[in-house]
Length: 186
Image (tube, rainbow, N blue to C red; front, top):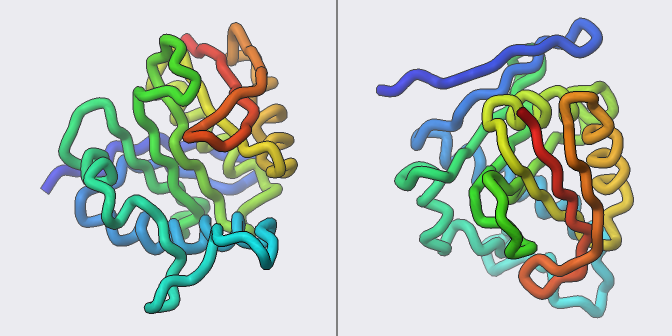
């Protein structure tokens, strides 16, 4: 069994750990994706077909049936992470090298989630910065247009002095209008 790769930082007396997710952690990320999808469903309208439960009471999300989800554990250039605060599971991140903008990049934040209980304590910021520092290079991430909280989080997180060459522009991620954040870290 391969050991977790992890990094530890401390925001305001909280011990934050970012651990590379093992294959045995795949179910944990799939479970957290349900909570992640719930956060999106709170912004969905009744007339929308997005974020509806399937027949077994779960949100449909491409990953369980999408072969690319397995790539996080079987291919290089895919990086699944679990995020912990004081040893308690607080969230996850999925990092790839395939950018939404089509511009050259080294890493792309596919998904990033911190549970509501752990938000507004610096945990997400510290976890994101540790992930970025573990993978120096050109980065990209997207935020859907109506997700004001995520946009504010990323703008604040990316104000860190370690972040260089910051750009923000409008674009699309899989046909969904979004803001595209591009930056680098050395």
